[in-house]
Length: 149
Image 1 (tube, one colour):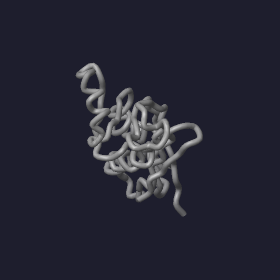
Image 2 (cartoon, rainbow, N blue to C red):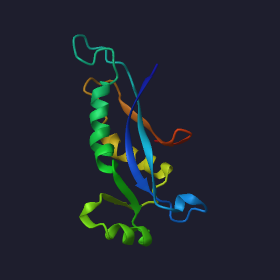
Image 3 (cartoon, one colour):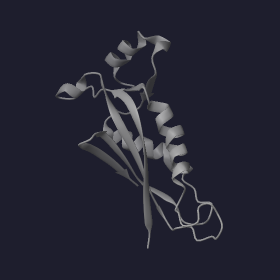
């Protein structure tokens, strides 16, 4: 049997979807929730801190904070081909955190991006076959996109 755990961080992040047919083409922001889903075997080694766990939740949080939160929190994520948004953000100069990406920053694409940032850091110290299986990105309380490998 396999066990799964989830841990999340939240960010306040701006974006726009330049070709969107409706209001998402405007610059705006969300309270995103980036949720990592990890599977593996429960650590059976006696006397270690992780005994009975897949991975310590605090260790998952540290990875999510460093690889996702600290990159996009209070920043504007903009597609490198979105010349209009890039020009607008350029006016603000160093006064503004801008993260330029090679994809349109939809929830779906942000889920894949976050997965790729986090996956290399999910490692097992006890041979319990840890694996990041999904990254779930909540763009709003009613809107969720997931990336599975």
